[in-house]
Amino acid sequence: MLKGKVAVVTGGSRGIGRAICMELAANGADIAFLYAGNTDAAAETCEQLAGMGVHAQSYQCSVADDAAVQNTFKQIAADFGTIDILVNNAGITCDKLAMMMSEEDFTKVVDTNLSGAFRCTKQVIPLLVRKRSGKIINITSVSGLMGNPGQCNYAAAKAGLIGFTKTIARELASRGITCNAVAPGFVETDMTAALAAQKDTLTQNIPLKRFAKPEEIAKLVCFLASPSADYITGEVIRIDGGLAI
Image (cartoon, rainbow, N blue to C red):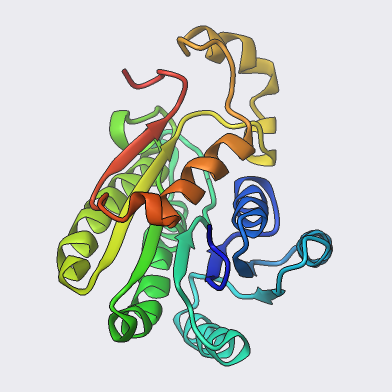
């Protein structure tokens, strides 16, 4: 389905990002993924991808660093020859109630989760425009749709990503490029492992009574990256077990 395509996934070494890399590779895409600092996890992900018979390479890069992003995407284009799919998945949390949150806590989350997506998208647009095709998929969150106490920074960034998605979709549609967003609810990852004590309570608020598996998010991303989704753009698709109904 994606054979011959090159996908770039930010935050691809662990959790949802790793699952996305694996699903895209399972469908034939070559994979370049960015990671912030966990070299062991990146090496393990690369090894797994290589075992699937695709070209895979990792790049250490903070999406909060504009110069690093520019250099990294130039290197990816040189190493792979092109880019067809971008998945903006990199994200961090720094949860506190607004009255206790410092400006630094707010800014660093927005700078990674929202501005990081802008930086990466800006790098791929010229490549996709020349090809008159391409897929941009942004990982947002139901927090950006409904808010979440203690996450004014995260929710603001994820809500901003929704507006960003719709604008990029409008700007690039005439060139055959789509841009969509996926909005997960609670997913079983390292990020939500800290919620173990609250998991039973949180699950009671989810109509399907469980957290998502990373692989379920990855399958939706893969669909949006595939030719089956060529007529879908500017959409925000919730995958949250009914949490935000």
